[in-house]
Image 1 (cartoon, rainbow, N blue to C red):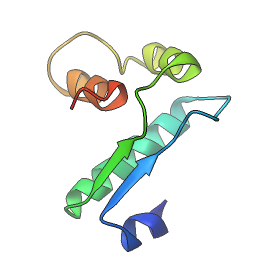
Image 2: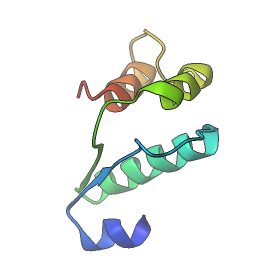
Image 3: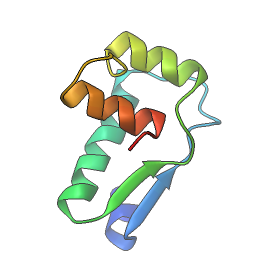
Image 4: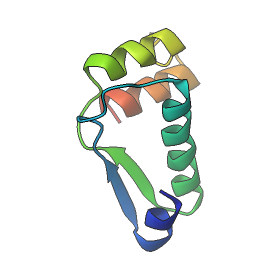
Amino acid sequence: MSLALSAQQSIEINCRDVTEFDLSLIQLILSAKRSAEMEGKSLTLSAPADGKLCVALERAGFLAAQAGEAGTAAAFWLKDE
């Protein structure tokens, strides 16, 4: 992902074929998004989170219906940005 970010102005991640999600993958994607933003670049998902990804996000608290950083994270995952 680091190579892709250095070579491209924007990155789109497709999670549709991923069969297992855990907190480490979620953290990796969010870290890459933050790194991209710090370089004036963008990282997005190709589609809103669904299925097993939504389950993992809910368990980790990223889809909590609250303001602030959790709300911002939910907007990223659900493509509401």
